[in-house]
Amino acid sequence: MRSFFALVALVTAATAVYIRDDSGSVAASLTASNHFGAPNAPQVAGATPGWYFGDHPASANGAPWLKDPALCASLAAAPHAIQCPGFGTVRARATTPPTPTYALVFQNLTKAIEAPDYLTFGLVDTDTDCQAVCTSVTGCVFINAYHDVNGQNGSPLLTCALYSKTHNATQATNAGGQTQPDGKIDFITNSDGYNRTA
Image (cartoon, rainbow, N blue to C red; front, side, top):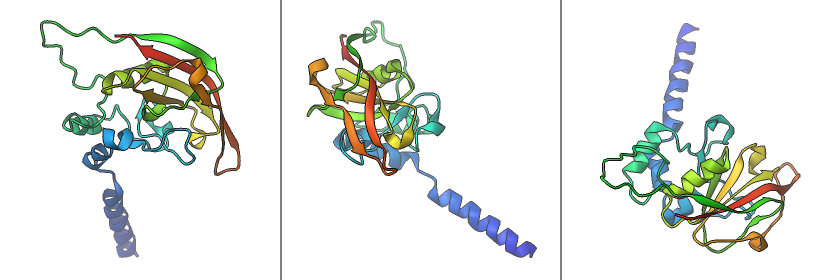
């Protein structure tokens, strides 16, 4: 009987190693050509976030965590991949570029931006986290952070959508309305938009 349990333990351990994600292969899927892991914009039925940047990775439904040191090291070695905000930042130059700032364009809407200049989307804890990711994505000039109620598998996190052009409140047309797998309809709350100013 001990042999049986030893065999089960061995198979379980081998399986756990086999199914573990390789940070290199994850890095390969987080490139601009794949919208940094989110090829479908958040308003598309079945869209999934490409990444998570925050302090609670267990609540991110398995999205790649942009604070995981191993993943961040792999991404840093991949020039076309999304970069982890603040990872390996070296301030060795005599003149450091100014830290980007963001100007609030709209706040607390019940709709989100839906636009063709979509770059990527992921999950964040705060608007500031969303701004940090935008700063690390080449071409990002606008963020829309909002709570997708009943969307993203019930995640309490904010959806963070990044765009390459500036937007305003009149362009926030996505009110949700997609039926989720559990039959609930998603809707948007706390939608904030910011333009990158520097």
